Image 1 (cartoon, rainbow, N blue to C red):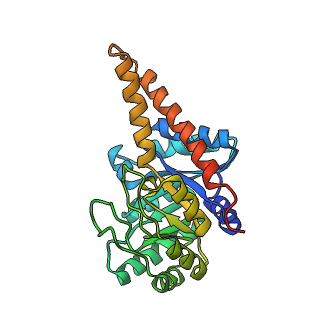
Image 2 (image 1 turned 135 degrees about the vertical axis):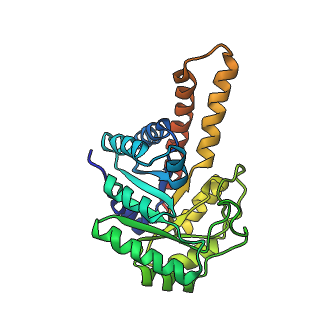
Image 3 (image 1 turned 180 degrees about the vertical axis):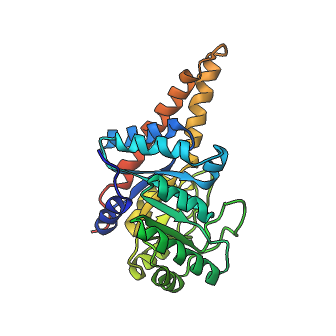
Length: 281
């Protein structure tokens, strides 16, 4: 199956009131597990590589090429997305590699600077038919950069999306990045208000901290793209640790990474079934 444009996955879900799972790739095994889980669920999925992960691997291209290849070999639609890119150069590299979308994160900047930078990135990406996500009202948890009580203002979001022409907006509604407990209090009323005001799909970052009922409630209220990373990393690590503890003489990395990959595959399939259930009607 050819690579699927991100808008071909997110757009129909947005219109139908369903969620789309967007899961972060940290190692090759993540990409394999995420796509296998999507195939098991029979649902489309988005593979995401963050700027932090590209930095960890010392380059975007190796993991990017691998993720693109896995996406193209999938039996379900798969898009490949650059997540939380603060570097314009990295955005350009992702576009050149063939990523179907980027999330340009200038949310640390003052509003007017965020708007101007995002507008320029969007113009560049749209010329290459690449879908753009931006962030307004910075979601907490990224290096402690923002107070956890921050919320996106609907009227400011309307002005921002109109001025930048972005295709989706990550909004601050109570979740926070890198949470290891699933007890975030999501503001469903704010999501509904944002969905009412904005034409573009809404993106929930920090979804690892949101439990199943919260995820379903967020989608029902109007959220479309749901980003999950830390939750899967926890399961990956737990499965690998269990395998290593059971066999202290183990030296073949494939043995414990296979167990970790299988754990992520199962959870991705389960989460996709949750997110893509019938939402608003």
